[in-house]
Image (tube, rainbow, N blue to C red; front, side):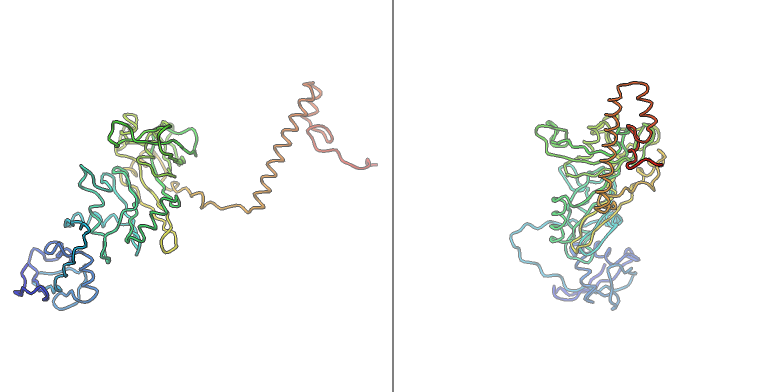
Length: 398
């Protein structure tokens, strides 16, 4: 990279493209040579016509060639410190930028949804340096601020992760999660098959003592309320089942603890299922828990409803166990057609009458006293007799 001789910070800068930058995107050139200039600033320069290559207006995605001249506007003025701590940005590599951008499955003015792969944490920690939060600078796109996390997924859980693109939309989404109007649907492969195909697990959860908060357990006395609904999608004999999970609360590791607590740990979850959480044969030992769908009200008033494709190991397990991917989409309760009120009342009345007749027949059989003739009359149920149709009223036929 070579630069013009001017040292005036308010002057336009000129750079010549060298051989090692031949063929790369213009935004990548900035990441290599001017990492302090954010993608949002580059985009603004392009929109206003200040960014040019060989005199022509350029966009961040344009490919540059050796020998071309890049016109860069004057350096951005340094903002006066306001006393608030400034987050130090660490320049991302091309590989990191490609990685996080490849995860994007939805993007609009207020929200981004990514399909998080298993094995990468949502946020950093004491021993966690590679995480989604650290890559969000690459998802600014046309904005000047980075997206914000509004919920989390466990490191080994894959699937749909919602990001807010502004403070206002972050507050909107956070309210939806706290008020339980948002719907999150997970797919899981579990050990064994529950005896009930559609059930609700209500077991309070708390941090397990002695684990430093790294593990949860069922605690009837001190635990916070936790509710999970499960529905069996398909079963592989008694060996395993493919289930849908809907958390109605947001406790740490809730789905994993609840499924292990009822004796059906998620396949690959050794933390809560121990050695019994792994299938033999070619089945992957990775966690089989995937955030398949997120449905939430968008700030513009329309529903945001996004599905994320499962990772390879999950799909391979479904195929190995003979599960049919086409039957996995179960409707949410609010998506089921609602019968008209009059029809519901009519069905309820019909069911009540049927139960009443059943009870009356039982009483009549009891009064028959067990005599053979009485049982015969009841079984035959001739007109006008107990258990049969009511006798015809009016004068006898002539």
